[in-house]
Image 1 (spheres, rainbow, N blue to C red):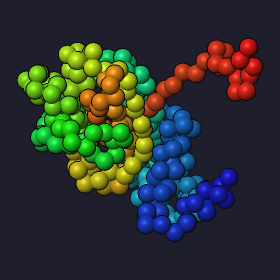
Image 2: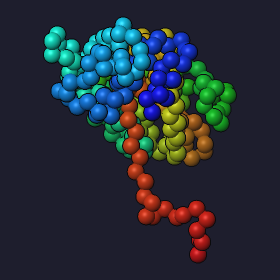
Image 3: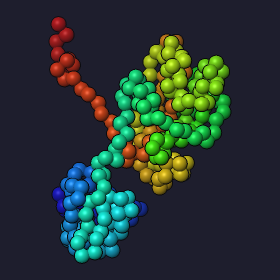
Image 4: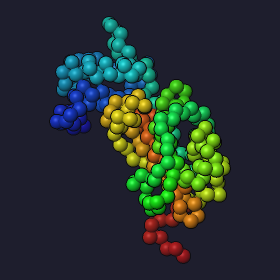
Length: 257
């Protein structure tokens, strides 16, 4: 196990060795290997364990200390002062009703960066090329934390009926409240990507940091796309919980009779 970690750390890449080590140590904190208040191994012990230089270990610990996860005390050691596991506070719902409630309960404050009228982005499947949508680009905040950058699209014919509400409220709850009859089916696709300059700036991240993209598409009974959201979350905040029911799900290949 240790040999494989050594190999991974020393594998050639553009990522500095100290950052690789930081992520390895951070993963151990997230798994709870070092509990809150515990003293982590000394600098020399980490040097011996990972086969890297003192300077590399110091730089990795500097990063963790900057994040508020550890504190170094001269003559006493390095102690865990932050719970890395609790950073995953943003539970992403996996059904429509929960998603609406989730946004309403977050008490979102948003900043609008831009808005306009146009067509849907190419990544939206089975769309009508000539249909117009109102779109808005926003940064969502909660508890002084910028937690998502959203580009949201609403069919212009719906926007025209509730312009004031769409411009003043979170869009998804507004669609659900005023145009419930237009919502027949919806999908959400989650992918992990690297933060571009826009996401990095507004989510207070470094360019290239992992972000989770949720692409949501809602259609009416005729199959027309009425709502689209492309939402970028810092991956470090996000968690997804799905409940399975193996006792009621039929086994693959089981006799239907």
